[in-house]
Length: 67
Image 1 (spheres, rainbow, N blue to C red):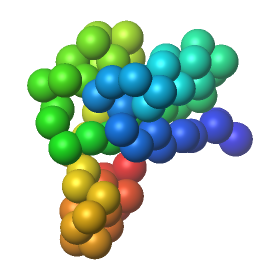
Image 2 (image 1 turned 30 degrees about the horizontal axis):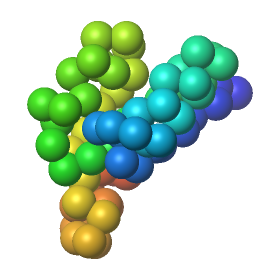
Image 3 (image 1 turned 90 degrees about the vertical axis):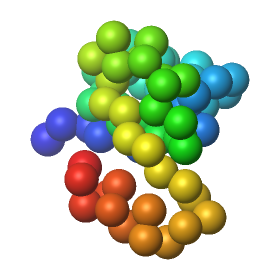
């Protein structure tokens, strides 16, 4: 079974660092944040990126369904 991780706040700081670390350890990582353009560096490394607003339940459901 493949390991999958969803990392919130992946556009910067601890979220971005966590996404990179998990990716380097072999996880299939999906970074989520409100702004996709801030996660282009993650995408270039092979990390999936999704726009998600954690204050919006419909946004969360849509993101999880996509994954």
